[in-house]
Length: 221
Length: 401
Image 1 (spheres, rainbow over the protein chains, first blue to last red):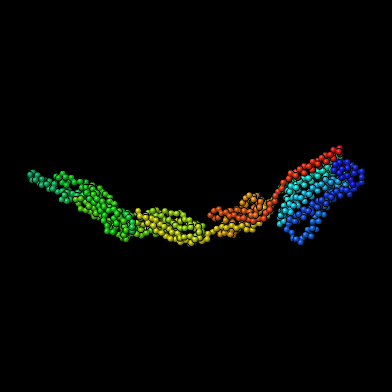
Image 2 (image 1 turned 180 degrees about the vertical axis):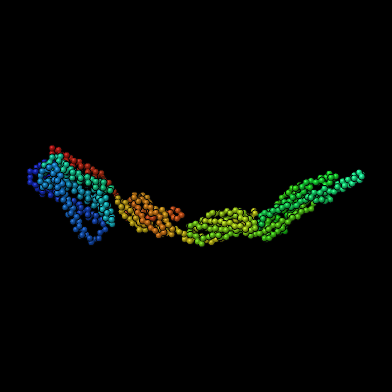
């Protein structure tokens, strides 16, 4: 088992040493899986809370349970999908800087960068369970107007201070992941620090900008 | 011959001097020429009295002698021809004489006139009467004169000229009354005064003034009944015959019907959530179920401690609604507290331009959503995490060099 603590505190050395080993996707896969499970659980609990606040017939419980599990699985798969998507984007951008290295290595090293996201996921789950889900349960969603209902839920979720705190922390941990990815691509694609920085900064910059906008500014739209 | 002429001349002089010098306006008596006093005119006021009226009879007496005269050329006596009036009296068997005597009037010089006024009361049936005036003169014959006085109690009459068959409640209608003077003389100070309950009548007094004999005039009034059940209207005409006030009344029944009135009803009310916490939209229709048009209709949310009207529709202008017409509206508001009803105000103007206001309460199920703020604990937590992450990232870059 690789020293995951070293990924966080000294990613440069970690990846430098990892380059001596064969490519192995097992550990990165486990890291991303943990994050995906956390995201799935959070989504499932949210779904339950929303359904609980609606006037639904009593005999529709089994169907809702199936839909709930289905949404859990889908949620986890979406999170899992981010891993290869990020790797592809990093790998493609690094070709501008004449990156040299196989995609498998990029995929492996990108997976390690998701470790801070696990912390973000844990905090997000705690916030969901402690604050957001109880709020949703209390709300009377105007389901007669789907557009309005969507807008209403969005407002509840985004304006909840705990959700805002969770979003802020998510951005912080994303920056931490970005820092790890810089060193990951530096070694996986044999880039200079500067080139690796740009390779990571472009997509992560977009992600963080969108995250800030949707959390703090889109609420008033 | 000369003697004869002188004798004839003397005879003629004697003859002439013995003939008294007489003026056509003098009387001749054994006491010398006398003044000639006559009644030159009379006036009855009013021209025609009504039973019970008081009035006056005025007569003018004149001494028609023009100049003092000398009776003969040999007699130097000059007669002044003034009339010594001892008394002037009015007599009547029928008329009541209130003031009919003048005593020791005095001398009335030649060519001078005097007016004597007598007050009478005609508490007698209609007809023609002839009170007599007697002028008692010193040293000459008395004068007696009869003055014709007519008593006619024909009153002023009122007649309906124009009255609507029915008058809508709370609406103005015009009524015209004709005032006819069938008397032979004119009357003055004519006014028509309307009296009615549960209605507004203007003017409160219609002044006509003088109406000549056998003439008529009209009075117009605007009547606004304020109830379906009103009294009849009494039109009273007051007038003066001379100095005597009289009054006649005309009773006019009026028929009041239901007036035209606009009536606005709130229907089809729906309450929906809106964007934003605790924001709601109330939508619905305003219907004119009355009998008159309603204009400038405005509906607005009443601003209270729990209900705050918000844009874009703090109030909604519906406009004009004809009878049986309707218009839709929507109102936006933010609620707080334990609101169970939302107060709205509906304003409109009727066809007379009067502003009418309605208040309605719209029931609502509301549960306040409290917007929470980021607590201090979260802020501290975030700061700590940021600090830890920053330290770790800083350290990782430092060891990477």
